[in-house]
Length: 258
Image 1 (cartoon, rainbow, N blue to C red):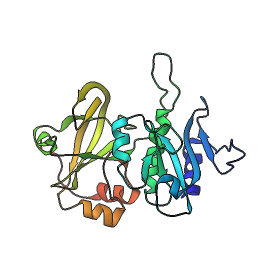
Image 2: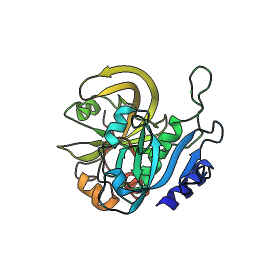
Image 3: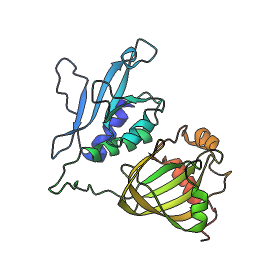
Image 4: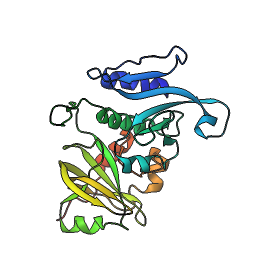
């Protein structure tokens, strides 16, 4: 996977690895072409140094996550942990041994790339041109009745996830007791100022999402996502594997009725 990720970064961002340390000549740094800031570091680390079982080494990638809530959700997943030898508040370490699916690693690289972009005068980041992306985002019905919200309106406000932009598609995974993807939505607006915090949630900005399609509760269940598409955790925004995207887009589920 280390080679696959290196090739992906080259193809996606036109960035080749740099090897700045003679003593650690396998440690590969990936920098922005304009500001020279790191957005990724790939290295081989002993499993014991990461608190894992085994005496062999494993390839990992360090990535920047500015959203502390997203970071906390990520490090609860298998294969993702606070950064090794970097700021643990804003960086994470991701195993490149298959524990974390490659499509999710690629999505986290995008988040890190955006978090380390050049900031223009006035505090606005340069926008990297890219086409629309597809995301899976979680919704916990214990905290918010998203089903009821979509019964009342085809467009609702939602917590904006890092890396999500206007024009992207989000698939809403509704957690237990539903445990299934229920909605396909288009992001129609982002960066809506909002300030909310409690013991379960912190929100600093919102996005508007418009309902495009409904799915039946037994179509894209958590069990099927794991068995057919290799998705075993949905604790934060994540990319959509190509095979799942094809299934989500060809299904003839219900369209919005509001």
